[in-house]
Image (cartoon, rainbow, N blue to C red; front, side, top):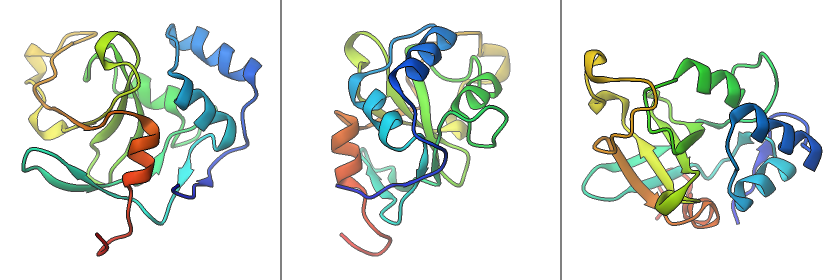
Length: 156
C-alpha cells in the first residue's frame, strides 16, 4: 500500500460526521478511513495512469480538513463549486490544477476520477452542480485500488 505522509492531524469519527453534515453528503467508507488515518498528505509514489490514451498524471497533494489551509478540501470545494459533478468530491490535485475526484453517490460511489480542467465546458455552459462527465476519466474502481496503483516517477 502507498505510504502517505499526513498533511494535518488525524480526524476522529465525530469530526468526519460534522464534515459530512457541512458538505451535505455521505463520504464513501474507504475515504472516511483515509481521513481518519491521514487527513490529507503527500506520497513519494504519486504517478498514476489515466486510461483512454490520456497518459499519466501525478498526485500533488491529497486534500484534508484544516480550516483556512491551502489543501483544505472544504476550501477547495468552495473554490471549485459548479465546475465538476455534484456527485463527486475532490480529494487531491495534480500540479496542473486537475482534480482527483471520488464519487459520492449512485453508480459513481467510491470510484476515482481525474477531472481535466482544460476540457471543462465553457463558463457560460457551467452551472452550479453541473453533472457533465465529458472531461472526467475514471482511473480506479476504488480508493484502495487507486492508492495501490500509485508509483514513483520512472517506475512501472
